[in-house]
Image 1 (tube, rainbow over the protein chains, first blue to last red):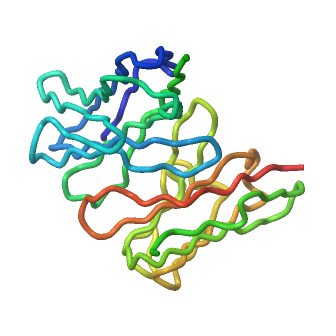
Image 2 (tube, one colour; image 1 turned 90 degrees about the vertical axis):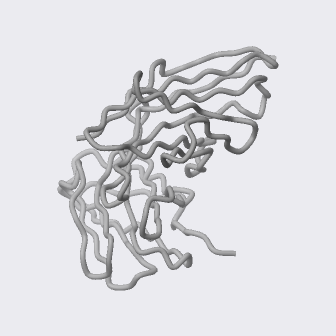
Image 3 (cartoon, rainbow over the protein chains, first blue to last red; image 1 turned 45 degrees about the horizontal axis):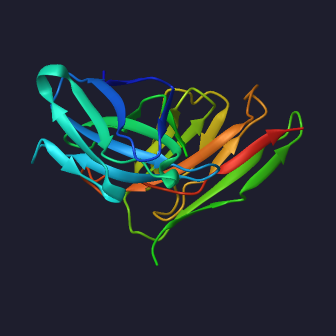
Length: 114
Length: 112
């Protein structure tokens, strides 16, 4: 079975500071990994995905994530936080075939302080 | 533009009543999913369907039912057997392979 653990249900950063949202996964098969963002009362939007091509993945809005197999991690980063980044972020895992549904973490709410 | 549409955006249910949440996509996606979202619990899978006329239970299927008669549509019925239905419900779809999901904008269901 696959699972995802997001460390920290709430992260607060100052505007312009580094954003680091942590995600660790568990999977018995090679994983595909995803980060999604959700704004209040909306659906989820795909930020980026790891599909075994490159370990450093760049996404939208200046976010990127690095797949580290040895650490079973897929942390999300952004060099400089913007007020518009305030949202909830979800990490998700699936097996490479895509035949099983995505398993989501519990989410991390990001607050950006002016 | 292609997308996935959920309706209604807000829904109120009386005790003992069944309600149906609509999910329609025009992306020609094969697979569709229903998730339930509660504060602090992330997204939990209710049901999913990878082809027409076939669907599988997710982790929290009790008290819910679905149908998949058309590729474009995957309605979710919340039955009176679901004792705590107040939540935000998200529908998603994807094409074959592993390309990530496209999500609808959600339906917020409240029991009154």
